[in-house]
Amino acid sequence: MMEGVIVQGRGGLYTVRDAQGQEYVLRAKKKFRRQGLSPLVGDRVMFTPGDISDEHGWVDEILPRISQCLRPPVANVTLLCIVAAPTPAPDWMLVDKLLIFARKQKLRPLLILNKADMDRDGAVSQLARDMYNGADLEVFCVSAKEKLGLEMLLERLAGETCCFSGQSGVGKSTLLNALFGLNLETGDISQKILRGKNTTRHSELFTRGNIQVIDTPGFSLLEMDEVFDPVLLREYYPEFEAYEGQCRFSPCYHGSEPGCAVLQAAKEGIIHPRRLERYHTLLADCRQAWRDRYD
Ligand SMILES: Nc1nc2c(ncn2[C@@H]2O[C@H](COP(=O)(O)OP(=O)(O)O)[C@@H](O)[C@H]2O)c(=O)[nH]1
Ligand SMILES: [Mg+2]
Ligand SMILES: [Zn+2]
Picture 1 (tube, rainbow, N blue to C red):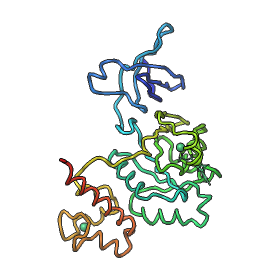
Picture 2 (tube, rainbow, N blue to C red):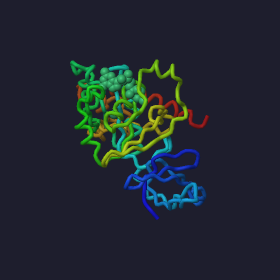
Picture 3 (tube, protein in one colour):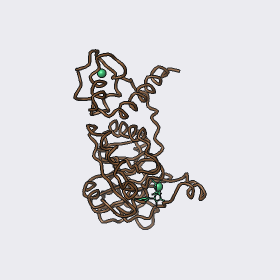
Picture 4 (cartoon, rainbow, N blue to C red):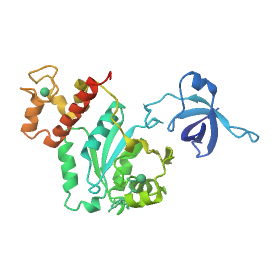
């Protein structure tokens, strides 16, 4: 048996790459279905290559996963790179939702502000740093187009398996091409619509040195459809931690309760008011979904 990583999966056929970069086409053994397990892009597996007469070999074993997402279906991702840019206008709510998603899935988040060449006065990066100060979020400013800040980013990505997410048009594909020497399709949104949306896109894992990146459309189509107790929402905000136990009520949702230490911190400017405002919007959505959960 050999060891490799699944770099692609389509129609029950898996492409597995070994440490030498050799690729093999495999099927999954039937036992996985009985176990309710299905191999995912990013999985490290033990496999038996097919011999010359066979079309394919077999995935024999899936090695223990570091992380796993079902939507998009990828395994062993360690880092979620959230990309934003001055244009299209940053959707900070999407960034907040992706942060919550990352923390739920136990992926380390990273904020990449691309198109630094369009943020000459640094207003966007300053706003991001202000809003996410205390949110335990590393921020990188780069320009995929002018190749600025890429070396530093690559250094940070060393040893990680990353996924890139964020609004369409922020430059994810351009960035992946610049970082990893890929040839993904890029372009402005109108051109993409003209060409027709390619809806059958699959996830694919690429390697550069000790960095792995999984290109998947799934993270851009994120829906926060998982219903959970709204009191848990605050757990995904590291900047609230310092105020734990200091609110008058317990539990406190940090919504509009009197004597709330988090609201007080926002009043004093320690927590950014826009970040808190979006938290309140999500809290309301979360409460609504929780009330309606049996409908
Ligand atoms: N000015 C500038 N434009 C960029 C940069 N990176 C990407 N773009 C442009 O932004 C548009 C969208 O890029 P694309 O990579 O397709 O975005 P995606 O939808 O996130 O994958 C393209 O027209 C790119 O040329 C950058 O660093 N600076
Ligand atoms: Mg793209
Ligand atoms: Zn509170």
